[in-house]
Length: 488
Image 1 (spheres, one colour):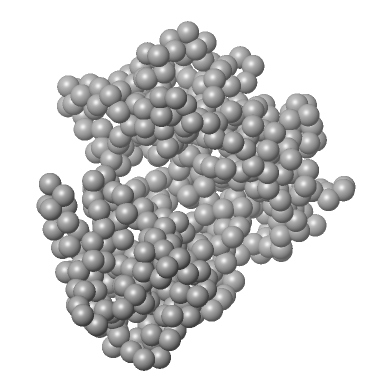
Image 2: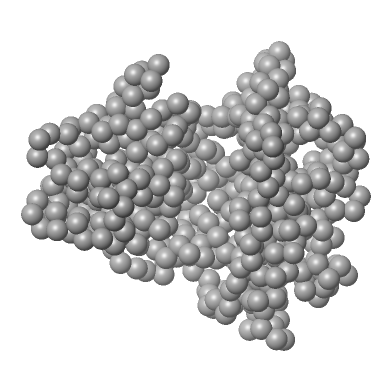
């Protein structure tokens, strides 16, 4: 039976899974790699470590004699990799590296001098994490290395495809995160490239579909990652896009929520339905006239963990859930009456403000530690709810991430949003999405289903509680502005 080898080169590890056309995961494995923190505050990884980890994960995944139909690649986005004549010319600069703030300001000024607005041109707010700003900085600090650069890739997936002999390629989702893509044309922006001092000849070829065959494994594949030559290499969307495909599939307009360390609401939409810069959300092209709309908060599970330490003396998540169950037995599903901003150190959505700090409003003499913990979970759910269209009330909202394991938190999310919440097991969503993209690229007859279509436990909202939260939502949104004003 044909099987797809999906490989996700994430922020900390390479994860591999062999998924057959019936949608069954035959085997999976992972292998980690280190992140290096430079003395001047940068974050970098060695691309050779990505390749070694990919080899280890694949070796642990493939059973003897496995017939691999295609290698489907995805991974972390917005990294800058300078490709030299024989591999990467230097360590990759990661998306978390913010050393290029001055260069970002210079690019913005250079574009403004020609009448261009960098944010409007790219469809997203740009800052020091832009790959254009990263390159301009390296051209200044390491001109000899920049001069020897033969091409650019923007993440481990593109680098591995290049190392395997496929040439320079970049998927549209990753490209949209670089600060170099013109959102109006879905092509590299010559104006931004000039401002970033990037020779356009260095930029990789852009894919145009949700998954695209960019080449085949060459003679070096056996040594590099343990695969034979001749296997199609499919470049899937970057990890955010692949995860969305794995959770909801290619259906447009279907939101999903994530309750990981951070949290977000995301949906795949037709490209023309996604606004350009809205000040806080991200717009990432997917290919095939689709775009990914993401509204992300910085602290979801992190806020819950902080609240357990601060209010519940460090209780486990399971013990805290038991408190919430007991509280519901006494008070029903009524909201706590607290308004909480779960911003522990800056925020991305519904406002983008690096100085914003959290807030708790509504404490009274009878407020208990369990109330404060429940209020924090409500605050996360309310923050996410600002990204949802009220017209979609009643439509199932799939939820993934570690926080999705908490039945009380799923109940709170259902009540706050007024939508049935489906717990989808999102453990391998990114790998599943990469496999789906591969199956589409190869035009396979398959039954690989996204997680939301595989069923799961559904938590219905309580109409009375949902009505109260609807009334609270505008006040919660105004609290962000009030907190920002107090911070000055």
